[in-house]
Length: 153
Image (cartoon, rainbow, N blue to C red; front, side):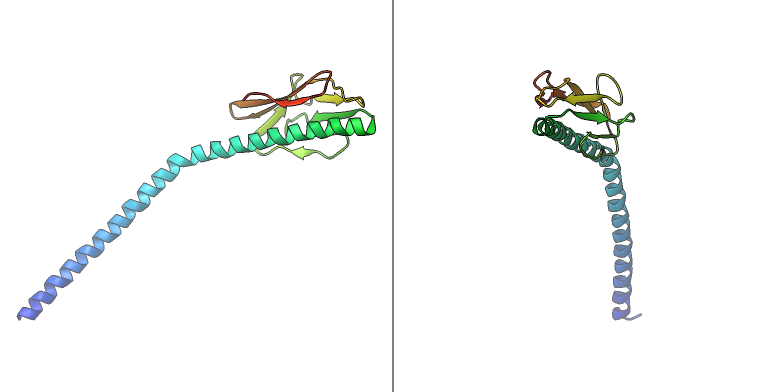
């Protein structure tokens, strides 16, 4: 064969070996990315659950303060209640709100607990526990003052 034929043959075999290496490299990158995603996903899921719990704590505290303010404004009792399944909550003067998936609410008296705000601003007192996974945060309601505070968690 001529010199040009030999050179062309060498170039063709060199390009063929480089193309195969590129495919293997791409498969390795995909495998590593998949393993990192599988390791990171549970942590991301727990982080999202924690954020949902914190948001629920803030909303419950705001709804409790709103119920107390409404009792004062109307000079009539307002009841804040939690559904027996712990997935919904609300005051007697408004609709029920649903807790996010994975978040549940309860009171010291158990599921379906109630907190009463009187027309003078006082309350029956108590706590609403917002749980997600193994973590629980308390929303505390003072008696007789009706003050609402978020506990440690």
